[in-house]
Length: 535
Image (tube, rainbow, N blue to C red; front, side, top):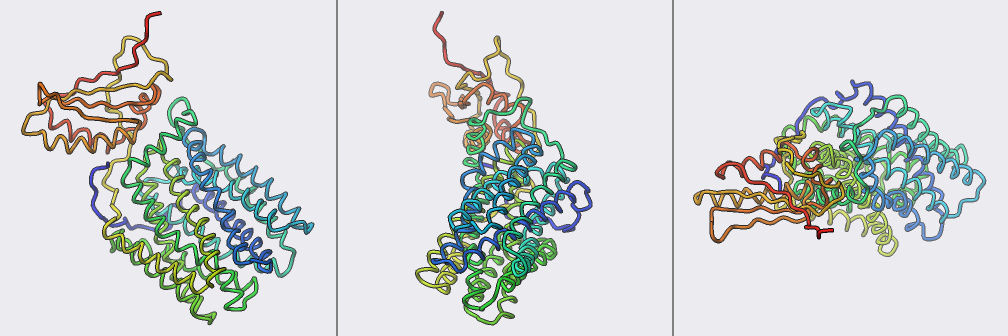
């Protein structure tokens, strides 16, 4: 596990400072345009299904179809983003998605668009977004200074919510003037624009090591890092507890607009615009508020505000009141998700950043996909009021768990790469795929230091497992109680060399040094391979 951090505050600062960087500004504007197109696509697809039988389920399935690919593709996309040039991966994905959007536009304009086909194309466009998200998020620390990463993450949330404000309103206007296919055409064009901007402005990001990791070992390494990182697991849990119940508002808002408020497509766009405006306002206020509140308190308060607004939206039938409730809901949504996203970006070391962020996207988008389907079914069988109230109660209960499962401040942990292990001294160089490798370290520990040494080694264990060890154990010599032998297995020699040269951070070095201070001298290290029979 990481060294026990303390609950802290989010660093304040200018919310707009990353936009002074020309590369980030160009990419941010392109991403904003792409997300506006995505929301136009979502509104157009949902509006085509409002009058279909079983509309409650079908409308919710639009969001499920667009977000479900995150569950299937986000982690593989993270592996690709950590192993290859992220800029080229993004360019290729945008061009393929443009082609899919162009076909969807043609079918929609000809009127040949049954619900099943519409949901299929929505799924394909969602697959493009799933593949793009990890490399896109992993690019941010390559473009902006570390101290601006939190502000850049908040601006990413601003663009997402600003897109919610502009995209639905623009889609509502176009739908009233033109066939729905025009909305799909605008979305397709946004992918082409994004590709052009990446070709012109996108940074050429480094990949892990001189040779890209193989896909399956890299996939396992990413999953192993998340499994053995308590801080990442806690961030993922907080995301799930907020997103799963919070999705009810986004998924079912079209039905609130049509059934309870009697609005047209333009009115629905107005409701989404209110959520987006609230989020943008929240981004401006967040740096000032975050400096006064601990991370846990802010997430708790934002969750309670969102739950209250979500309940109020379905209980009142006055348009002005609903809009007034959606404003703080949008601010609370941004406050929670941008905080969790920024904390994850800042914490993850570069070699596994895209894979770790892909896990967060799996939780975030997958939670929305599952939540949309869940609350759509609840609304269909019990009604909108019951679905919204149940979702809000679930959010309150999840937020209450923050007292026993708190968030932690990670700003004091050194996440920079650290090369402090001596190079292995071997008679012959093993093949890269040779393994598993058994590494042993023999320590001499004075009797007075045994207890704190054992405690320190629990942190060493998690460090080894995060960076490559598949198995770990610590033994004490029964004949010489002051002698301890640490053993851990690494799947291959190439994996162990990556552990040596690429994966360790300053925080890992601090962990190991705390243990070494309790020993008599440096450990004796051995690298063991399976014995081979004589030929």
